[in-house]
Length: 129
Image (cartoon, rainbow, N blue to C red; front, side, top):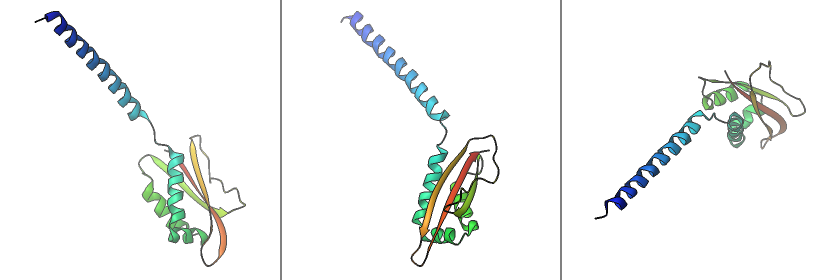
């Protein structure tokens, strides 16, 4: 049996295992440090609101409590804060007070239900605490 060839195969296998383990560690470290996309989270919440007729009616009646309860169930409260604004379509409808943190905004126009046409705009401001 040729020992020299056998040792080279073992050496190459160990080198491949070391390289793969280093790549795996780098890949998992990058995944852990990535933060969630808060603007996408706001868009997803607004998409759910636009599909739910009772939430659309709450916006058209400017019932902010129902919308805030829904949004609070979708946003983790331990590190994120939010504000919901409902206003007329032609208003700017900004946040009540601004801070020096990054604020992510999503907005959607809810135009009508089957009985009336009273368009409203709903905005969700999300930021890290």
